[in-house]
Amino acid sequence: MKKRSWLVIAVVLTALAAVPSAYAHAILQQSAPSSNSIYPTSPKAVGLRFNEAVETAFGSIRVYDCGGKRVDSGKIIRPSKKQVAVALDRKLVQGTYTVTWRVISADSHPVAGAFVFNVKKPTSSTCAQVFNAKTPQSVATFLVDGSVAGTWRFEGRRVVTEPFGRLDSATRRELDAEAERLAQFHL
Image 1 (cartoon, rainbow, N blue to C red):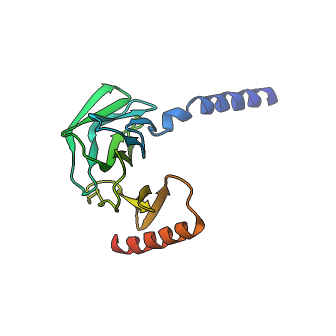
Image 2 (cartoon, rainbow, N blue to C red):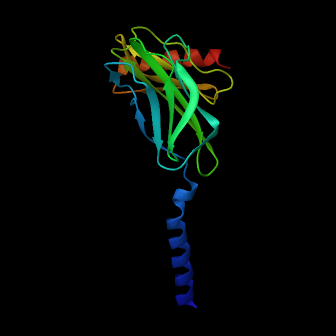
Image 3 (cartoon, rainbow, N blue to C red):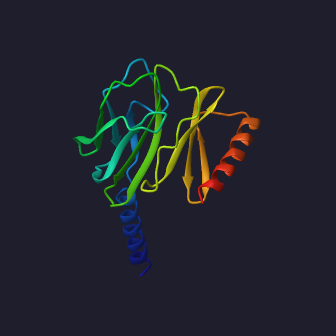
């Protein structure tokens, strides 16, 4: 009886070890342009590659300029089952651009995210919030010493800050205080 119990436990553990990827959501592995990159010239498209096949029938990729105006063509391109892209409908001028995306992962869960990239150099002021009530999250960029230093996004009634690098403690406290003030307007 003891031998049989160990066999059952071994089979269950093997099955559990073999399936975790079936329950994982799609993960963005690469983007072009990459997050917080500085391109010397305007890219022709924005592309995303995920760790698994994704569905875009109810998804989107959008690119906004710093004023909150869309600069993408609106038509999703599918180079492969794991890749999605969108062409830009114009040559981008110098400044900061925000990419927002939403796809459906293989396990049927929606997955969304956002990042910024720059053409020639970052915009020297805070960019407009580019999401509206129909998008799953709200994201805006913030600046430290005139350079884009990260993003904020709304999660329910909280504002989460995501710096691109290390911030000194005084800057971090100031940023967190500003995030709390922003959260009051998002209720």
